[in-house]
Structures are given as structure tokens and as C-alpha cells.
Image (cartoon, rainbow, N blue to C red; front, side):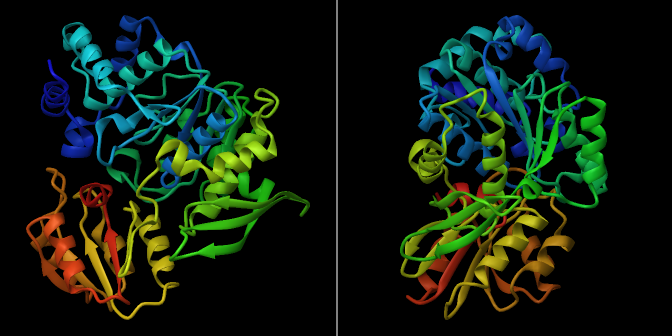
Length: 432
């Protein structure tokens, strides 16, 4: 198979949650364990850090990988979904897995794996584990796809588990209360292995404490261990922020930490990342404060992170962000409110498993909307989204594609306007 044929095989023949939704979801680890057994247990051949959470796990994964890379460790990074290229899911020191390695793996293992009937994500996780072992990484940062307890990545035994936060997302699979969702995320906590919780939330704190006690795992809450405050933020000309980080006594431990990401939500992610790195300093002595600062500052350069409050253009100011659930949209709208503009143009699309009644009331009523459907089967039709949005006082037109909607917004916007694109990772992916 050529690389294009390989991708066609992966996309068309295997159930893929990000495209079709519930039909692709496998609620157990059986397939992944069988695949790893055939491969010779590659996931046991290297050290790992496991990341779960409703929001922020992608940013946290990239930031951790960047710091380890900066420290000189050969660092694997497994994330999902991809934005432009399938190979974004599997990187070593920021470099995408080569096309030939994807093709060779699928060619070699398609027949042995067929009786297992794996999903797209199970295939991808197996490929990542095999590639990281063959390339002899020093460690790999492994992001869950959904949930934790039954996620395909949950076959690893990490040095550290990280759970960023708990919010309303994927309720059909993870539960219809925050404690139930937290219980699924807590499933990545392993016997005797420490866990860092990024955000203390009263509704779910006891869930994590109980699971950690059951697993005899040391636990800490990042926002109880550290605090960070914004020294300076750059919204337009130079996206990024400078933070100061102190311990719980108020003693400054990292002065002037530059993060080249402007999203206000990154302040929480920074606390999570720094807490995790301080936990790991004994095992990885190269994780000094100067190295941590350099790794954070170079996250975009090192790992090519995209889609997080990403400035696409300055005149008109044009920004995209992958926030796509209630908590993510709340933060996006809050940040929009802090930017001066004459008129707001909002390119907006969603997928069909999101609760519109939770999300649409959060959106700014003064914006002009450009409703669109992400080019995947799960995408909500633009006309239907427009109809639902009108019930909440949101006005705009429906467009035939994300690209057409984006072009219409850019054509209508004045130099001092703000164009924002989001609502779904897949809207951002198509624009990028």
C-alpha cells in the first residue's frame, strides 16, 4: 500500500469515533491488550506519563513533552485528534512519525489484527507503542482519547498519572454526573503510582482521593501546591503570556515564565505541568528550573502545538481555538470579552454529541455568526445549528462548508474587527 492507501484503510475500514461517534467506541481494553500481546508488549518497553481530563490535556501533554525534549530526553508524544496530518498523533522530539513507518506497520499487521476487529484508535495506539519501542524513546507522554478507565491507552503503567480537570463532555459514555465522569478519568490511577490533579473541584475531589487511597497512590492537587499569576499578557502583536509561579507558602520558584500561548486557561495548565515536573525531578535530574522555563517557552517550536488561542492574522485579528464543550466555550468567550474590537464575526460549527442547550446560551449575542458543518459524519448540519442558535438570540447565515463560512467572515470583517473560529476541533482543523 502507498501512504495514501494506508490512510484510506485506516479511515474507511476501521470504526473511528471522531468521525462516526458511538459506533466506534469500545468499552473495554480487550482489543488493545490482544494487539499488544501480538506485538510483544511494546507499551512495557519505555517509561510513560499518562494524561487524562476534560479540558487542557492536549496542552499539558505538549508542554510536558517540550520540557523533556529540552532536557535532552528522547521523548515520544501520543495525542488525538490530529488537525492537519494523521501523523501529528505520533511524534518523537516533535518530529512526525515517518510515512513509511505508518505504511509498513499497517501492511505487516492488518491480517494478524483482522480477527480482533480493532477500532481506528486501537490501531493508532498500537502503532504508537510499537514505534516508540522501536525508536527506543526515553519516555513517552500518552494522552487518553476519551475517559480513562476503558481508554485504549490505559494498558500502560506510568511513572505519573495526570488528570487536568472534570467537565461536561462525552456524557453518553462517561456518565451523566461529574462524579461519574471523574470516576472514569480516575481509572488511569495505577497501584502505587503518584497522580497529579490539575484543578480542585469540590464536586469530584473525594472521587480522586478515594481512588488514590484504594490504589495506595500519592496524590496532590496542583492548584493547592502552587499558584501562578499573570505578569504580562500579549493579545495581538506577540501572542503569549509571562507568569510567576510560587509554592503554597508564597515563595517564588519560577520567575518570569514565558508561555507562547495566550489562552487564559493556560494559567491552570501551567500549574498542572509544573507540579508534575517537580514530582519527577528525582527521577529526571535534568529537569532543572532553567530547563523547565526553556521547555515551556519553546513548546510551539519543539512540539508544533496548534489550535490553542492561535492567532491566524492580525488585521483583522483572527483567532481559532479548539475549545468545544461547556467549560472550553466559557473560557473562550471570556477571553473574547477582553479584546477590543469593532465587530465580532464568529465562524461556528459543532458535532452532534454536544449538548447545544448547555453551549449556545454561552455565546455572545452581539456577534454575527457563520454557521458551518465540519466535514465529518458527526458534524451538525449548518442549517440545523442555525435554527437551534436562533432560539438563543444568535443571528447569522448557514454556509455549505467551513471554508466557505471562514471566507465569508474574512470578506465581511473590517480591519478593526475580530474574527473567531471554533466550536469544534474539526472546524479549526479545516481552517488550518
